[in-house]
Length: 388
Ligand code: SF4
Image 1 (cartoon, rainbow, N blue to C red):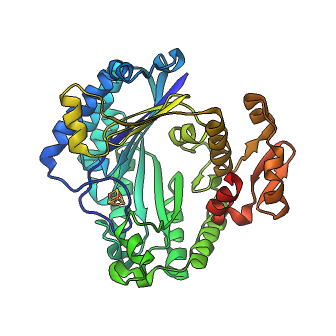
Image 2 (spheres, helix red, strand yellow):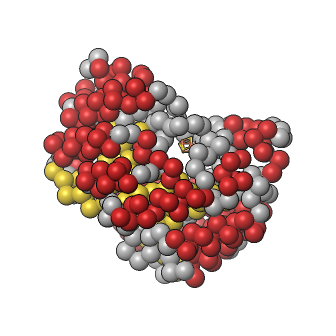
């Protein structure tokens, strides 16, 4: 069985105003102890999981790690030696045949020496937080990089032999206009990354910008955030532009040139097992989901004292598993295969889709149900209706 490993690096240089992740701005002196704790967690994961009565099924315990994903935070802030050490801990602990090793990177953190060291460590895919090609928008949300950094970083990666590059863009940043969004898409296509993720600005209490928007304030350029309708139009323009440029739309937020869909992220959407290491990292064994403590200092302390860093543990019931299949299946443009689900779960689920089909939100094609293309930008509303 193939196995994915997620490594969480919860450190950033500053905090972007729209960020709702558990990350911290800390002294770089805290990086080495954190990396050492992650190495320990990897090496001792089986013993520590047993302490929590989590027994990995043999297929998973003996699985071959073929994808690794360093996410964060800003994992590219770490010394490349640290990333190398964490990958070596995986090599020493698991059967492995790395096909895709992704590092999330911010463009301004990239230099020629770093990129060469990443490639030497085995990293072969970079996911860039580009977010926009407008310096006004980048500055408004507190990003550290500017448009020029993206143009500087891409050739550095190519020179280091890393050619599998993904760009993230966010629709709905403050000061974004239809023209600036179109320009960001055009510049992205000129740089021809192999993979693109398009996100809509998330508005919730977890970020400074989100909570300002919810209370109707104007701090953090909240008054300059485009309307929901404008964001939906930006998403639709991205779909059309990327399709015309040869990208396949394979998941609500993700587009890839043929052969470059993210193998690691596909494991999440297909409910394949994965293990996560580091503060706040999540794991899924096929029957259980669990999450480590979010606080990096508490995580390091817990590992040092021989305790489990696990903060949440949940046994997934059959009905929860089916709900997950529906939610994750509809996120993928290939849709849900009803026959497969009905065989796996022994229930007929066809009726659940009728009202959403009759209102045009879902489409059926033989045994396959999928979100209607023109309603992809309101997928969350459709999911809420489906789970009622
Ligand atoms: S770089 Fe990413 S993780 Fe860090 S604060 Fe910004 S959005 Fe959050």
